[in-house]
Image (tube, rainbow, N blue to C red; front, side, top):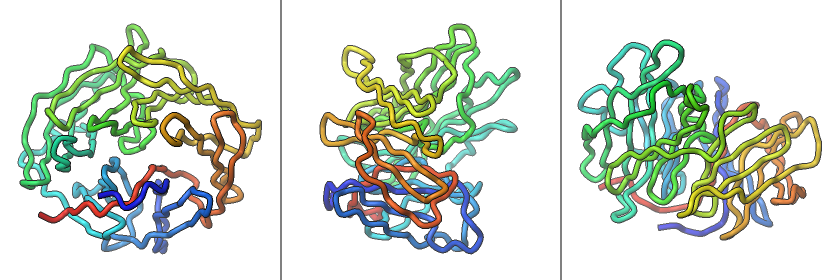
Length: 315
């Protein structure tokens, strides 16, 4: 269903200006780069757009704090609003949600999973309920709730920020905070083929740097960022392997944003210089490859790798 393998980035602003008609941007990062603004797909300009990942060229997004989740194919411009779950997943006051979007790799059926998260005293969390949405029959199903080690803490408050969640080979992953006892991070994984949860350990303990996860060349990757350096562990059948240690030239105006796949066995790093509306692309040795000018680059943004597809959303 993919139209081409040309590497594109979908840029989501964390906040949208009231009169902004083209809030989203598609950036092609090949040798002949193009910047394509995307018109607002909502009935009115949202103040905030939440993204819960993408699969086969289709994005799952949400407007502001509304309950409606939307599947959107930017290539075909098809939009589908998901029906509300049969039972409200948020069962307790001040509960939050983990949301993941993907597809069953054996059938290519789009699915979405919701997990209710309850915060207890001292910031510890537990899961209250979970449901999965099957797009073929447009229905939600209650599934067993995953369990957590005691005294697990949340790592981030931005439930839709893509630095903390990722889809890899039909399995969705969320980065959870360190355990209060041993300071180990955990990664919650959900397999869209068998609708099963699994808990994975991260390769590092808590330290004063920015932690994240991503998909790198078809594998789950763990990222640790500190100023202008990024270390990347890749998970294989034997466990975690430290594969990249990337440093970009010292520049106080450049912030390292995320790692991107490059070919089958390589990686690139995306940075930004907000004051000049520039996106910077570095190789794994920290060399600047190219930079892109984007008008009105958001101060806070999320970036997702994107491949064009004509995957249908209608029955």
